[in-house]
Length: 101
Length: 239
Image 1 (cartoon, rainbow over the protein chains, first blue to last red):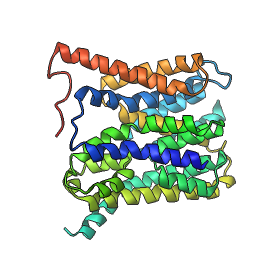
Image 2: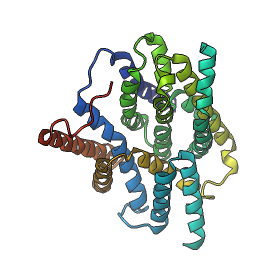
Image 3: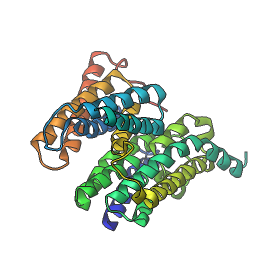
């Protein structure tokens, strides 16, 4: 467990610190900047889609319970832009749908 | 304004972040406890790692019994985005000593960055303000996760929609990233290809493979666009 925590501490510190330390001397090419700019979107999509479309048996399926909850969170966070409110709404919708689905 | 006054100003501006971090931190502590971490391990991780999405992903991977190497690698790639934020913030701290920068950058998060860049006049060459903003947010995260870890065993994880807390968090963070039509394209490419990679390969490599594929396609599209109409395709360099 401590290897995990300290390893994570090191690799989270490095990308936070390096640009702060060196960027006054380096100039980042625009294309590299653009590529890095897409990484968060790409990583988060690659986390979210499998959660929604993979069932326990490792098959790609439509899961209405998850999908409807996800769409609610998507629309709500698009309009309201609040992280914690979106998380709570997602939990409530998922919980509520549990009674009727 | 005095250093103390600027520090206070930062603390004040952190309050919306605190409202967000306390409940999400509690959800983290709760899920981490459920994955087998002790409350002190939860507190230590929140103190030293201090990265929401990575910590949630890490406990998911710990729960699945994965070892430290894939967890640390995934953390590294998820937090690469801070490289960009650090690059942007560094523009406003040209004269700050390196040791102080090391301290400030260790507490950089998406949320504190978002608040900081919307208050640029306060931030510029002003470490006490940024420190006040970040230390307050950091404390909220650590306290929230310890509280969640301590009271976790009294709450059934399958109730009140808690199983959907993580997916909601990631969906919301994803929505925050969707700033243009191109980001939507990236989402579709990464999302669909992640389904394929997960189906095709064992383990958790689908996240990295899909992200690299989609990021690569994004850069290629950008370059083609730039060649077709120079200067029109990408925004002018900042700073």
